[in-house]
Image (cartoon, rainbow, N blue to C red; front, side):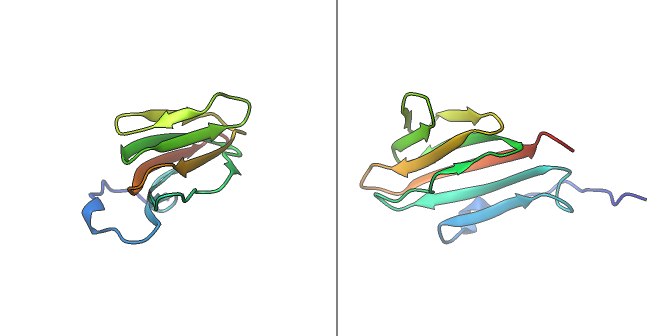
Length: 111
């Protein structure tokens, strides 16, 4: 018998540090993972691949760039969402003098 997953409310106002996990897959969700990232001025998340996941990056505050391998630089600012399909190399870089905060949501494409 599968365990039933219940709806959740997560308070993002009580987060601390560079990364805060919102959902971490099973048993919190079926395949979805998400987190809140806070980058200090000049900091980056580091180049990485989405592998077998698709990802949505939603900029909440601050300014920066999203580098996607083989694409033009994307200006990251509040109100911008960036979708990365599976197997996409990318990086998020804070280019401002204030913190850059964003939420990412990833979902596995192969179950």
